[in-house]
Length: 155
Image (cartoon, rainbow, N blue to C red; front, side):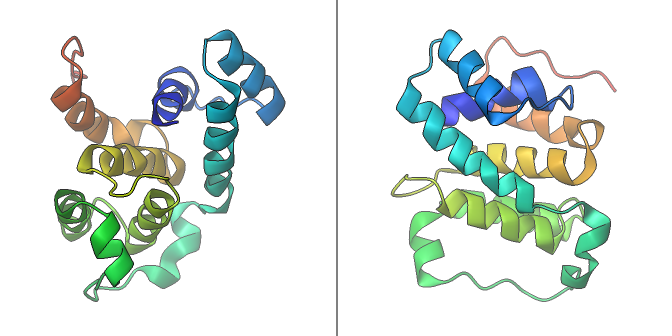
């Protein structure tokens, strides 16, 4: 399923184009993805509809410390949690965005969600919260670590 999310980010999210679910499913099938994986990815993406732009989430803009539940500690890789804490402390990810990332990470079927997936979910959250240009620095970070042929964006 995560391959589909990366494919969608590369082909649709960056251009801020998001076709309806039926068209998207047909395009994904034509691209070679399996129907069950497509269904899971589309269901997961349904959570995007609940992510409000940053201005509407001001009530969660607090400076408190986030304590993870036992389930979150066991399912979210420590490096991924640390990455979220770093972004939040640097003012690059709001507490609202962090909570959305945690919720979407827990919605995955992975027994333990690795840091690279948490980074991709964060990239998708930042795209939804602020648009593609604000997330370019994170895309360079995420892709630079995993894609050998990726060329970073020149700013």
